[in-house]
Length: 452
Ligand code: NDP
Image: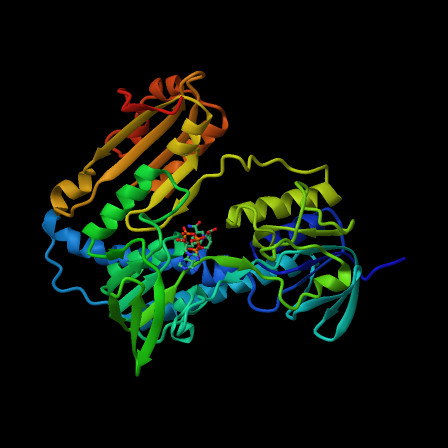
């Protein structure tokens, strides 16, 4: 049977676009359907605009800190609508680049939703299209909160288009998005309350990072409400009231729920193709991104593996190489570094102290110090640098940093860790002075032994 396309990718986000481009580069006849915006979550309502917002907030902090260096800048004011306008221009530019990247290599694009009719046929905005192979790359969507009054709450998709800057913000959740937006709103001048059901933010991260971040958030003026659930949100005009289970009420101009994201499979017609999903709605795949249907694959957040943009890109690239190139390309998905763009940010790679301790004795090296910048600014801010080392082999299993530029620094450290570097390799590396990063190669004295 001949098909309209060799490969049809559903979803024009980071993973889908990479998969399509690599396949087309190997000569496949490829189409991509995108129903919302080119570049997906990362480009439109995720990593990219979030980082621009983080930068905007950092300017505010820097303006305040500059006084310690002799600057007299006068009172700083921020124009929220100017930021949104500039951000929208940049995102539109990126949308255009994505389209060019696809069409430039001969890929057919559909700005429509694609729905399975059968395992080889899709309805794409009313048009029947067939493909030999199909990749599902539809990503995820924010989870809506379950409590009464959820209609008064926004999610991250909305946060990038707020017409007015909220003076008082309540963030719900203690994950990536909540701590990142806490820093954004606080840095831009809002009073921020963060409500989480754990004792500390960022469950799953190293405990020292979690404790350190909680202290930094508190020091910056963010009010943390730990180990408490939201009972209800009510609204009176534009004012929202968040009612917590412990009886506390918080008034705000904006209530923002960041309680996770779920795979986006709604209306895809997966049943028509016989594609299996798990209890969370994620498309079930094996390590090669193959679903239970021989010629249908899934990559990125819709599979709910490691929900990070570079991982989706790696999965898409590897799949396209496996299907049309010289075999799958290998990425080490065991030790993926990640950054949290909180204020201050986090960079982390490899095992946490608790994970390492569960495997056997681990040597822990930890340093906490005032970074040079803040010796003059007077801002109460500490940097934390930590190495987790397997005691038996002396291999570095994990590296963690809380402090300025941590995500930038951890990228380099992650190469060493992926190469299997031992503590002695870090020790024989001469530092770059004066930097915070040099602390990773000057940690001489073991702080403690964990596990074993
Ligand atoms: P996360 O999964 O990171 O965190 C969700 C948070 O919400 C947790 O604190 C969780 O608590 C809490 N939560 C979940 N359900 C409820 C509930 N019913 N009531 C109260 N609290 C609840 O989700 P995010 O929304 O922050 O981010 C989604 C994903 O997007 C991330 O996991 C990450 O994969 C990706 N992301 C990555 C970024 C980066 O790389 N810098 C930035 C932003 C997002 P508990 O811990 O108790 O479960």
